[in-house]
Image (cartoon, rainbow over all chains, first blue to last red; front, side, top):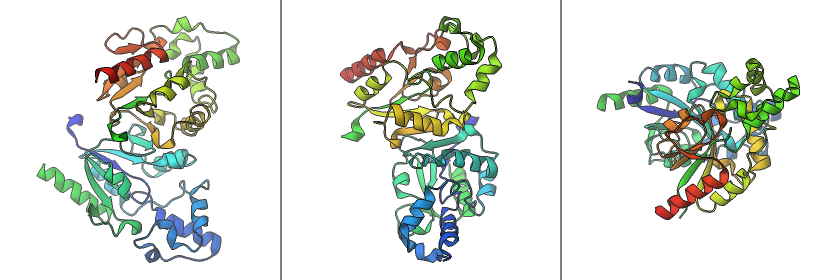
Length: 182
Length: 182
């Protein structure tokens, strides 16, 4: 029966991990300035910050990924999806190799119900075949051979060519409706 | 043109990284006893060692994967394969999460010509679709949707149901002959 279940690949950054919020927190901690999330609308994430180099530096600093806040509703959503789908965490983490273990530990802390067997850290996602991919980045969604679902992030709001969900309740509703239509 | 190239997934442990030799080296370092590689023939790797728990402990010790010797001929073979194939390193590293960064660093040291974009660390390999998979473990080869190629290791010598190569020159010859027949 397990082999008949549909597979869902779920991205980490900006999908289950609230990277936008973490950028704002780390920036405020260093500069004492809280950037409004609205300033990130429709532009690359780092561009909303007066000191872009600082954001880039934060991303490569130990602890950044380890302490990122969980996206609202993500834990409950994944637990629910796992009842009906084979759920995989697929993160293009190889660009930030120091984050590999941090991301693993973060998953162990917040998503302990996800087996290590269902975690994939890669460079790009073109070889990973699942029935669905939930991701915030067009470059990942474009290489998906299953159904691509764009998870809204401030940086991707101008893209209109994808199936879009704005929250975890919306994502669960979309995937569950797929099962009904299948 | 790049999209038309065949893809090859290459395992790390016992394929480009000489884990058998590393087990023998670490065992001898602790116990002063050098186990003959022939003792590993046809049995699970750790079983050849009088103290199996020690081998298991070594695998989970920092530095084990970082200092593993390179498999003879692997560097030259991958450089040659990359002329004609899209080559990916695909390691089921998630079982040993502390090894994630060590494996990345090891690849950077010995295979710097492999881009981080072409590295995948996963739990199991069932979702990774390539035209070829070179691996020593039946469980990985069985889940391969492309052509499975068993790289000989002492522990897998009793398996007869796979295409087998005994060395890197043999593996290159097999893959290059596939291109001629394509």
